[in-house]
Length: 186
Image (tube, rainbow, N blue to C red):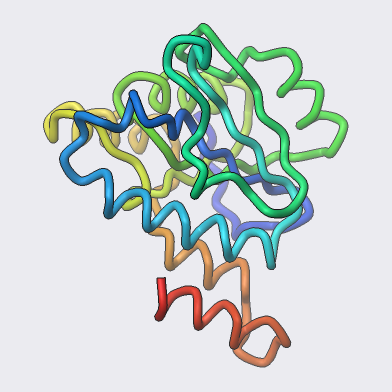
């Protein structure tokens, strides 16, 4: 378990949107709110960050990532059959090549793919920021217990807005007005 706490370092950080596919999201009651939070995070990350990754669980059967969450900037998609993406060799190579040590994670479903991925990433010494208002499961108890388990293993809980403003750092930067508008208008 990692016991170090530090702020997000943009050079060492990536955004990972997990399994935001219509067939996975369909039975999730609060999916619209979660999608909106992921969208805000993505739009801000496109301005403030550099590395955006998307995972898709069994896309042949479950479809692609919903169109709203496809980045306008450079990104990579990793298809998977395993619930966890932590051992995906292509992703591991990418993270190693770019010297990424921190991952901001959002998406679906909290107690399955996200939990298994987060536990694997923590085991592999990544610092994980779990965006609590940008993840969900079909059942509240599954979501709540999974969040608690991941937190107890070392994941750092945050909200989409707190992550956005931590990436922004200051109201004096040129992108602040654009970031502020993302928060207010989306």
